[in-house]
Structure formats: structure tokens, C-alpha cells
Length: 88
Image (cartoon, rainbow, N blue to C red; front, side, top):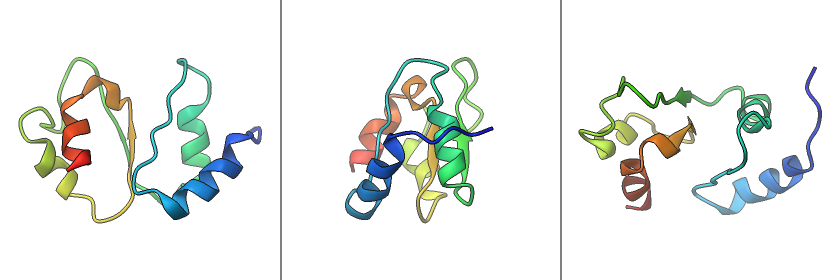
């Protein structure tokens, strides 16, 4: 069962104005659940802290170029290299 969250209204407003939205919070508080509930049609990439399945560290810009539109990047904190590529 999904519980509505106050953040949903803010996300709806932000998605119209911002190119990037970063959601930070403690582990296991429902951040990923919220995003997959609100945006089930978006690609969802979950990163692992141990293995770079997507070769993000080698070429973060190439990784991002795979996505033409919005994408959910879950656990992006494991790949700080992506932050610079997103800014560019």
C-alpha cells in the first residue's frame, strides 16, 4: 500500500521548472518508492556501491547520453562522477 506524501505536491511543481531534482534523505524512508509511484513510465537505474555495472566511472557523460529524457538515478551518491556530468 502506498501512502501519499507531502513531497508529492512539491515534486509536481518542481518538475515543471527544474531540469534536475535531487531528493536526499535517510535510508529506507520511501524516496525510491515515491518516485517509482509518481513516475512509473520513467527509466529507473539503481546503482550499486561495489560494482560499476554501467561503466559510469569510466565515462559518466556517455552513460547519461543513453537517456533522451527524464530518468530516475537511484543511489547516485555512490557515483559522484555523475554530478559533474549532470551539471554540464
